[in-house]
Length: 277
DNA sequence: AGTTATACTCGGACGC
DNA sequence: TGCGTCCGAGTATAAC
Image (tube, rainbow, N blue to C red; front, side, top):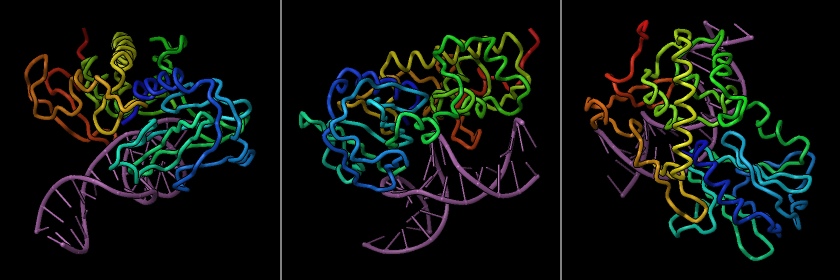
């Protein structure tokens, strides 16, 4: 499941290989996978040169002059230069470049989306305007996190997954962040002390940074644009490790449902209550 | 207003 | 072999 580190990996790869190319055509294979805003047309993509590729939360933004192509991979989406034979039937759209190379958008579940937008209304049309703070923005400090938590209630994992508060965290990294700061996913956020908020902030930045350093976690469908696997799946402490021993205390990792999602945690290392120390 | 629950997208995996 | 049911990430919407 592509989350911030996986999307960042793809964006970096795209920036290296796709910037400067010109679009010759855009092929829609599955109608529901491609959304075109009212202020533009598919044909306006023709001849457009790619200025840069950027990321906002889990969105990939291919920046053109006066237009943007925005991609969200959701669960099973991929953006790749080539598609293996048994995946070809899941190709939903193709960007064709003037140098004859093609970038394929494939997606088994059809949850992923590509938005073709004018520059002015792209953030509303895609939903990017509703996103919260970027974890790697200078503005995202422990104090900032404390402000975001202020007045809110609910479970910690549910909070971490809210894209309109902090953008980019998904199921894998939410579990890893909770483990890293020793907090239970169902811990009520209104009980977090100042020190624990600082710990949580540190864990968010640390876990996402590690994911980026290791080029993402290839746990289900994620691959880079050349089909390369990430490495972060080899360094996960709890996600996908149900019944395996905790690396810190050897207790079997538990699995429950938190915030409606399959959730992994160590019942010994992650506390549901906070001691006053 | 903010939180929680449910529905929705879709096709693969699983069980009978 | 076939069919029905469940599952999942993220989001939208409804309900509380």
